[in-house]
Image (cartoon, rainbow over all chains, first blue to last red; front, side, top):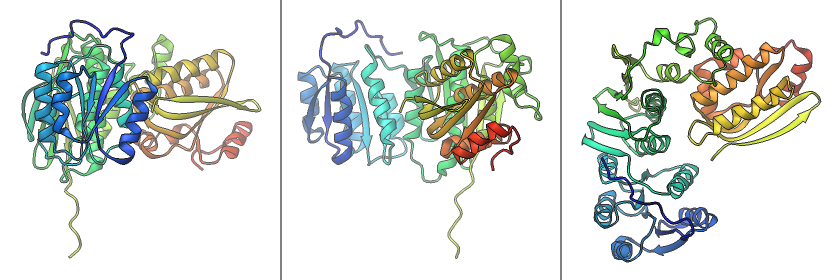
Length: 298
Length: 123
């Protein structure tokens, strides 16, 4: 696991970011977000001088330029983090390969956006990076190839959101975008359930996750640190509502004074083809079968 | 974009214009839930949720909408939806939610339906 921060940044110290040029709207957007929060910004044209600048200046955040290959960004990150282990670095890129996301996670990037990316999601992630008073990673890659990778994730929402963004950064033309969106959506629901109910959002606890890319399917396994549960006993979960009355669990929750909820498992079930729990109930596998894109009519 | 909630009224119907996302991420669904519960506690019984600019909803957001619907029904009130679209409509469709909670494309029609009490879902 990564070493926790030893101390928080003094609240009155102005924070600073180094922005590598991406050009156009992205630079403007990032500058607006950072300055609106009172951050100091230094701009640089490319990666060439970033290492030198980062060694000389205690930047809190670096955002790479989208023109650089991820491999170069990751190498840069490795060098910077050997000197400044808690620096947050967000990778933006137009030039990537399928294994790049794993490399970025392995080296401790804060986040990863491969083009085309959503401006609103980028600004949300920049704000998340800026909001962390003292950051250490929370995601540890235990083993990784583009076909099968395993990692652990700390039980907190910020780590869940970072992990989900890394998955959105995976670009594989053989996976239809809708299928990819559905499995990530389902995974996020299951991950948050695991972190909340298995790990009680305790940052000292971790969830173990594996992704497997088979030729015609994607599988994902999530194991939480909890004692497990029996789905049949959860009257307050939507998965146990009658097919004719999808709100029966909501009435149970209302009567018991419970907060709104209970849809996570059912939503995940509807988004993937299979959702299988182990006997104890602390481990679940999601499977999504892939339907190859139709070939053009001959 | 975090959730922004604006509240307006038309006769005895309270309209909430939602902009952004209703997810667990930064407590957006929780803030929506508190806002809705506060309105119900204050006596509001006819609620119209304008979802035109709601970009994303997860199980927490879905749960808040359904819990509000159930809570209002128990109090002889009503909840209706206006213009769900995109990813939000996708999630509602998965659950056939618009078959259970009336959904409208036109605000005037949605408001009129509160008066008639005899409406059909998703005109």
